[in-house]
Length: 399
Image (cartoon, rainbow, N blue to C red; front, side):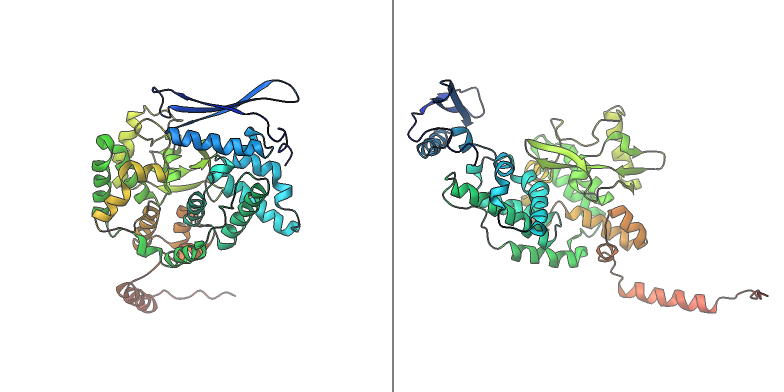
């Protein structure tokens, strides 16, 4: 680690805590010291909700200083620490292994955990990150590689004395992955049964939200009729809507990143067009009118105009309590997408069209939504019989 001995062992570090009652995190903890090389005063600070948290932070940084570590190093963000120490973390690995590890670091670890200080990464935070990767339909090897690179980076932090144990060594995720795989084998089982249930869910979520914000219900209805992910609904702009043909071109999604939510391309890295059925056209027209058709405006935002994520929707509407109350205790926000795709399949949308609407890379993924009942099979036989016995004109001979 390039700066781990920027302070001599035993350097005097002076702490203090300021109480600022007008702030959401009123306890500002600060450490000050004199740089022995430049003779300049340096400091590092952080704000906390409670005085105990502030004292814990000071204690942790003081212990780091006694080991000869700079306080700035002790509060370094995971993304910065990992990028600076990746060659050490991955030493001994072949290039065919380092490439997928680095992809996992860049595409999954950094967006979900990179904003956290190395010393603040916990088993629980890693657990939630892994479950988010699984929920995003990442493959088993993808999750394994992403977790493996995180384990190696945190192992380097352990060797540097920043932490006293490796929080990335979590267990049970493979069982969680198997459960998710079983669900995806039959995504139809995750769908809501009918339109009435969808609107009831939306109305109940609105009723439970602060200020009874109607926007949450609109998001749920829109997602349940377009087979879109919540992040894609959040990324929808007015200019993406075509009210002449009543279609929506899905171009981007809102996703967590260091420093907050950001917009990026869709999961499949390409735009797709989905129909806007009659049941959502009035909703869309109402929202377009409210924001005066500004092409760059978001069609859906939170009550304060901010970006929406699946976690924001969950917390703002008390999602878990609501779905339990209406009898769908295992329903997740992503299951609104399964709902729409199941309904489209049952309505007879051809599988190749359904694949384009869903944005699936594999036709096999789309085919999981096709589950004809006994009557559908019987009807197919009747249609074949009619075709075989239908009168036909004389065939033309080719000479």
